[in-house]
Length: 114
Length: 112
Image (tube, rainbow over all chains, first blue to last red; front, side):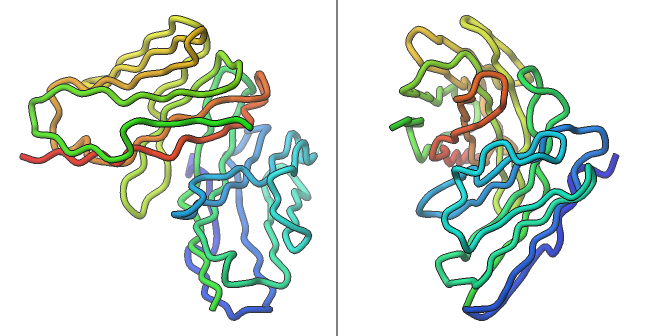
């Protein structure tokens, strides 16, 4: 398997613009997670899905952030409008089985908001 | 508020030496994960510890979990340069749902 795929790998945008990050989980994995990593706050779980359904979005920082999973092989994280403090590395991870396995992380998207 | 604290946050050591990274957490959980991250890279799973007293070893790394003490350790034996990386522990706070809270990370540098 190719592993978790994220696109784009790098994104530079200007404040106020809409940003969409994309993720393709490993085939057959039921869980999908979105994380954000910054120097100040470390790794934070934003939201996760089970079988395409959002289970917990308590980590989403504010209404400017939204995530969808329209099918088992695709998820998006959208920021609208973007702000400089959203600059971070965003990771997507997937997991095949709750409780006994680990999460497999994608390569991440490095977002810079100017 | 849940806290997952790693100690130390920075560690510089010589090749061939042994050392331990500690991960303390403030909530009840019997599921703990260790990950490795190289600079500019993603996270790689090292160990999954799913019960009190669990011990797992891979090469020069060994991880253990004491759920009563809310403590996990990652022990490095006879360190080699290739082990230089940042190591994260993560606690599952929603039993079985893999809702993970990560520690701050320990940046390990191993010098020849």
